[in-house]
Amino acid sequence: MADLLWDDVKCFFEPDMMGSLPDVRVPHTSVEDWQAVLDLVAEKGWERQYSEGETVLAVPQAKAVLSRPVDAECPDLRVWPTADVLAIFRFHAVEEVDFDVDLRELQGQERLDVFCGFLREIGRRLGKPVLMDPEGDDGHPVLGFDVEADRVVLLADPQVR
Image 1: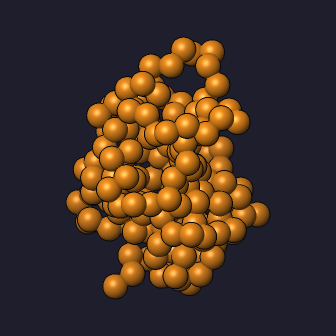
Image 2: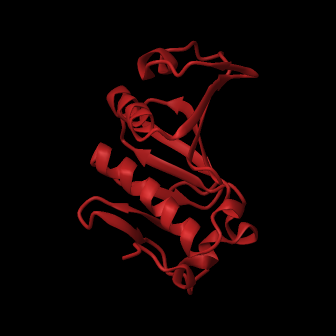
Image 3: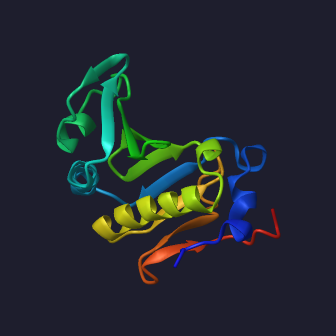
């Protein structure tokens, strides 16, 4: 059974409404949580590409990435849970695992199910909520993985949007 139904949430996947790159985040994390995400990506065999600026490198340990100098270019990790869905992780802070998704890639029930499955995998691995906020609007999640419910749930009323 699907966590969410496309018809109930499609307003949250409209790029004009949410911005095309909503913010997805796991608050209150540690280096160990970041490493758990990197390990999950490898274990699942998801296609991935780590880069620092224009340079593509092997995926390092989380501790090494997160201990880079403050003025160093922010690295990113591109992860494809399926060939046509991309999540871009940014290593901004130890305290929050954050990544972007492109709403244009998440249209329809099938893609929504892939996205929910991706959030579920991360949330279950970390035992923490995974929240999606409109682009640039941290703190007002519209949906996310709920640890207690063990599924992705609505966190905002679609009728209010």
